[in-house]
Length: 325
Image: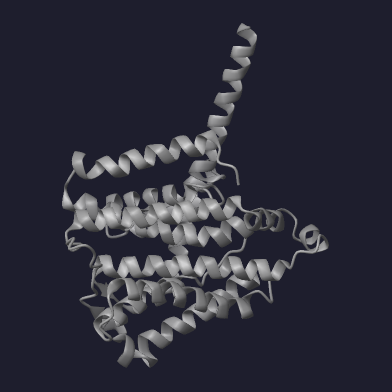
């Protein structure tokens, strides 16, 4: 994937906002909200690696997020491991569960793929909520999840943890850009465009799908570790299918398949959630209505429509410059 001028401009704008936000508006509530949005953005980026990259709808990504959260919670609380050890375990477990899911889900496609991932995800949720409650804490969850310890920096300070998450988000974006620009990314794009053609050219389509799913699971596990650490708490709700539903809405709002779509979708979702929940208890219904309206008026997602507008502007500008000559 070649970065467009629009992608570069938008990325620079996000970087400027992210860097200067703590100095312009150092309020703890806003810093916490943006930190939460950045973590959800990592999760949405991981999800969109499958959804936008291959066009496969997964309702099982809550599992990968949840096992990542439990990995860092149990590692730091019950086994005395440092945060980074728990985070590494979260990535490995997220990828491992994604691999296990792929053995069953990739045998089918379309709506059946979504249903298989949903069924497996709910099975894991039930196990964590009831059958394994002695290990997971059940609905009571696990409290006191630790934050990173590095160079004597106090990451329990909201601003310091914000900078930490921002650096991780930037590294994830760089990794995703590199993957999408690599030969592997071009094969994935080819599979989404024409799976039969990719198979005829000799590519092992199922293997590429499986690898993509595993990478997506690893990124989701990392997001789960960061989220549990931010909240300093972990419970089975993170594993529920509604979490997968939320990330689907976020990705569609922003524009699946676009570089910054997942991030923008998360920001819009979180802002609408905070605003609507501040004045009504029925905020989820209104959020659903807002989602319906946005999909009607912005079928390509927010970023898709912005990219379309930017391309039209560039074209008209070049036409005017050509006419002036």
